[in-house]
Length: 267
Image (cartoon, rainbow, N blue to C red; front, side, top):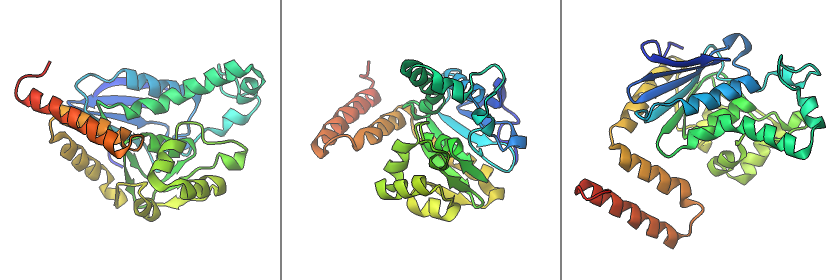
């Protein structure tokens, strides 16, 4: 892939994560292609920091991985007795109290939660493998543009684990319970064509066109006024948890805010 962020201002570059910003578009890049952008607690902390570091002018965040794969998931070093340097191993965490273990997993999840913020739209540009934590990171984003070589898989169950990095909720929302269960329980690969057909992918393009497709999508998303996009995202995010009449009510309230704002009568 060509670089999406060669002309951007650097904001963060640490532990396999680089955040760059150009005007209203930020790019978060996973920068360890030698390991297929395998993930670690240090990388998760850097991702969480990237979310906290976004300037208020940012409207679109693009997530991408350097090299041939988006992210091959959790670095298997996590399952060794030694774990990562300076980090408790997963085995050590398992020996801790319930509260300590819950707090550790909650901290890891922070890397995956901020992508849902109402004031931004997030786009995952996925090529090659997106496995386990990599799959869940792509699912954390609002939209997914995938190259024709993309392969998704949720391998946690085969390791005796569950997907715990916030991926289960969006997966079920996108493909339904039965297909989500089958994908997770079998750990099979979901190839790019199936991803598009089942709603995992918003757009499927040849690998050579991935960057251009993401740029075009970002430009289209920036065309509408920011406040209208924010209100619309909030409406859609909450729609499945509301009744039809409840949704009508919040639509009216949102539209009233927009009309008053357009009339110069907003707060």
